[in-house]
Image (tube, rainbow, N blue to C red; front, side, top):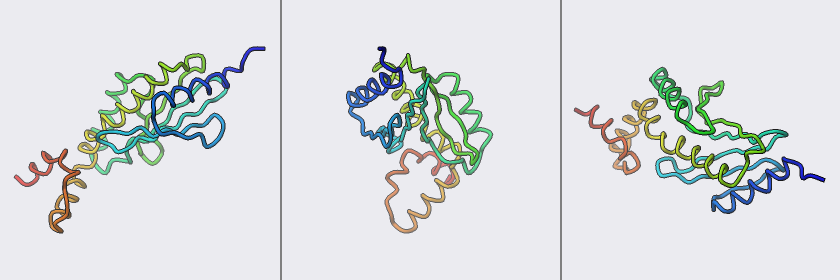
Length: 168
């Protein structure tokens, strides 16, 4: 008797997650939550759900932009042309996610690795750009508030050019 595709995909997925040495858990059969460490964004949390015919992938990227919506969404749509296995999506609140599907037959260790790499690059790699486009005013306010209180602005260094532009 042949092994059910969903069961086989679960075995492959679990082995690939162990090999990737990432933090993950399975809160229920066929559902996996993976934490991918980033360099710009501390973590990207990825939900992997095995369905009857496909593996769905969802990851939160950033909340709804405060400003410059058209430029943010245009940037996302242009980037969608270059992504592998996932696309940027917006939920009803305007929060930005990555979403994708992979046929169960395509769930191999190499594809899981490639898909998680694509999610990490699209989330972590785009994080600062999305913050600059959609939250520049908030970044400037945060910097001014921290500076006025003598608090560290170290984690705002990546946005120094935004702050200097508003000062000069």
